[in-house]
Image (cartoon, rainbow, N blue to C red; front, side):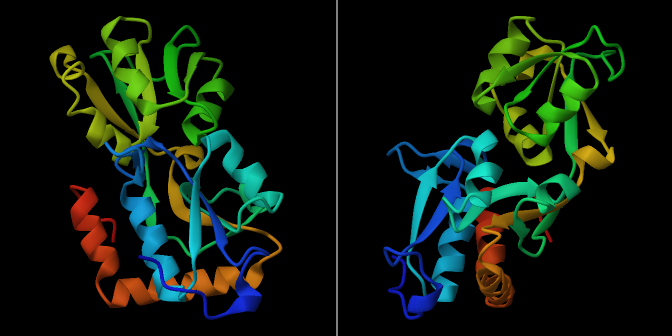
Length: 236
């Protein structure tokens, strides 16, 4: 349960912080069997709200809407793994980084990034999708990472470009395992770097609260416990 609000000036007009989350980025964010938001980022959002002693309402939005919606003030912050880029920083505030991310090229043996003729799939609105489009690859846009195994198994794409955390989950998919796909880490600046939560640009005081809350949940062990619950590797 989230704690009741104790700091009215920090809250939205209805007394609740509005938080954007995803449903298509396991293990960071997904919808569980009961239809509720779940995953590491969702757990962190709840922990931050508890640490700030504020009430929060989580709303699932598509990735391509996260930055515009936070920038427009529709949400107070987004509990979404966002690479800290200059383009995004011009539109929203960013929390302190809570891990560093790389991207993964997941493809058939011998299929390497390069030729414009490559057929590549990525999630709409992601840094990986923008990068694939910029390379001139024949890019298939999907709304959910769960769509990627079927595209690979049906030979409709040569590769997928995804975040590292998602690649670890995707490798366990029964449709993927027989394909013998090869993982290549992509170190390009557009595809790796600090990962943060986005904050409404009109709420600099909230960014400070969120940063203090991140420090608190790291000190008291909540961050590490969520890390162990949802991820097979250490973020920090």
